[in-house]
Image 1 (cartoon, rainbow, N blue to C red):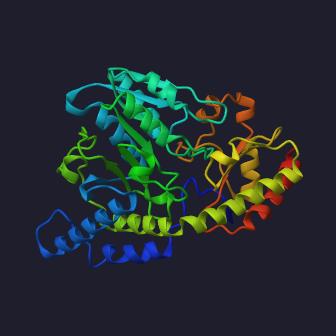
Image 2 (spheres, rainbow, N blue to C red; image 1 turned 60 degrees about the vertical axis):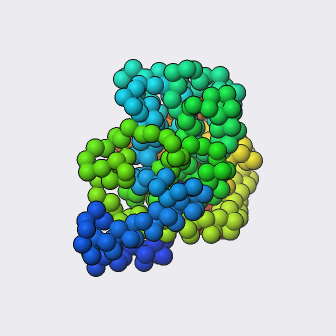
Image 3 (spheres, one colour; image 1 turned 180 degrees about the vertical axis):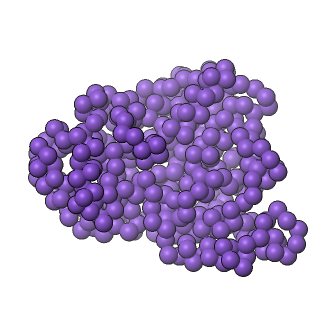
Length: 378
């Protein structure tokens, strides 16, 4: 199987499995306990927190909140700020955000929080000026993702954060950097944000683990209630093995970022060039100079994505249409709709994403198969 769906999830890196193993066996303790077994787990948890803080340039380790994944981190950031202090304040966010942000924002809207969903241009990018103009006295949080999970388009998050902070310093800026971290510099200073969400399984780490960086001074209303772990911001027994695995994956991704970008860009560019040589009417749905190097989101006119994906699976190629975070039903992407594609065009779009296991030659090799299948379907 040629796996070209790394945006959905990535294989766990061998070094990550090795780092996790002791905490699945002899170092199994609950870090909230007081005895020696728990202290061993607690020490590992706090060492991981310190390292995660270093990797994203946080001022203090306690600004890191470990969560059960990127979705929870996004929920905590958006709802946590909007509902802080018992208030019901507003959210501003683009129409192309991940459902973890959009559905949280819509839920808050049903609770009475003001909600503004912003349009994007044909490439899927939002203008910083439009974000600032949408902020009102009732706005608590602006949420703009660093890179789109479907198209790979990069949002101008640093410019958005700077513009919002200048005009409305009381408003928090959150960024979902789940897709971006493996390829882009995602730090406190680089993003300019007040809250940053990450997910382990997009980096070669285990599923079910994420984190939210929260700038010191920002108060969150928790979305999970219980034993008061994570300074009361996120209750629940820590998955120490998963947290250790995630931070190990973060270290590996950060250390390999330059090489990673070169490898996956070679594979992605080779894929698009070869596919275009076979299919002259191929359309690419994001500009080359403003997207992640691992994403190829293409439209093949006259070929339904659902049928193409089934045939590609039979040929040993794994790809996707839309976000893999849906329940599994094929539906028109809200991202493509916001970019102006009609239902027919959106139904002909497929996402191919390369990752840490990809080789440069995987791109052209895959393109030959995709082109043959597409021509057969036509």
